[in-house]
Amino acid sequence: MKEWTWFQAGLALAASFLLAVVLVKPIGVSTQFVIFDGMVARVVQPSLVEADASAKSGYTSSNPYLNKSGGKYAANIAKPLNYGFVFVLAMLGGGFLSRILRKEKSLKQIPDVHELRYGSKAWPRYLAAFIGGQIVLWGARLAGGCTSGHMMSGMMQTAVSGYLFAAAAFAVAVPTAFLVYKKKGDA
Amino acid sequence: MEILLAIILGGLFGFVLERAQASDPDKIIGMLTLRDLHLMKAIFSAIGISSLLLFSGIALGLIEISHLSIKAMYPGVLLGGALLGLGWALAGFCPGTGIVAAGRGRKDAWFFLLGGLVGAWIFTLQFAFLEQTGIFEPWFGGKATLVDTGAKGTTALLEGKGMLVLALVLGLIMLVIAKLLPLRPGQKQEP
Image (cartoon, rainbow over all chains, first blue to last red; front, side, top):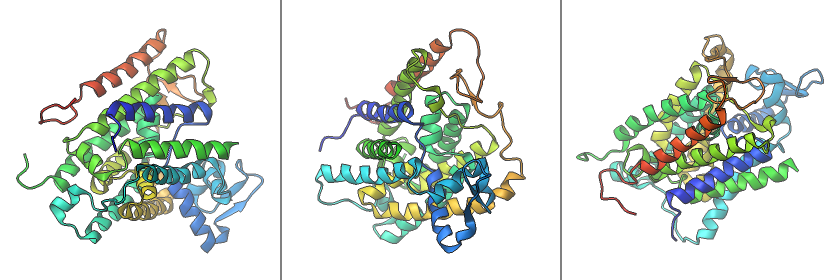
């Protein structure tokens, strides 16, 4: 299948981000990891989120993070069918749909850059992805957003936080990628 | 209605990220090792185009201002951004592209998501402590933008007339960067 050029990809991404703002609000993803965590935690400990008419969102949590901004996260944990969470679930579906329409039989599971340097065993790749995921989401929550929310949605609105987030992310990501994935002997 | 929009917009975004090859760790690492700047050119052009249209729409009164949402600036944005960069380079996924890659059927992406859920939960438990360190103290008045968007509770760093022009210039700069970046640095240019 012929892949999109960078400009076609840019146009399609621009359309996604712009449509989201025009119709609802800027795209953001990383918050939903907390929401899902909260849903799971609430199964174990139902008292984590409770209805409270005096809270702005109608819900409170014993956890200060879930309780901030008038219990906004707590409310989303209590009501899984909310915009942000369904949006992220739909992203899974979008990725699936795109693959189906590609009609590719096989999907290479281990990235070439990983295989070239670390071999084709699966578990080192899974470990790198798992550890990377922990660092990415901890960092994204500290920053209050990720590549979607800060970098794309933020810079689109000329948010200072968006520019500085992008600068910090690339400043660390580029040397790290060189260190971890540059083949020995490569220039 | 809002749920229907969530399905349509989320589905579209997931589809587009996959087609842009942003959910392919080889493409991400290729960008970060400056060998293949396809994605970087796509990102810059996307920001440029959407910004141009957004500010044009605001000027024409076509955009509901309450839909805008400016994130606050504080020290944690820099530290968190740096950490995201570290994990991004290690895994080859960011939160959004990890989700799309998992939907696409990549097993490593499911491990990334699992790690992400652990990381997000650790943060959730540490938040009360982190809040006392001053890492969330606002900089530049918190929700700061370069150009005045008119969004509630935000500060514009640059004020005065000609704001629309400035926004359009910023958008164009993004587009020019996207155009000028070489697709494959250090190799003969392909069309």
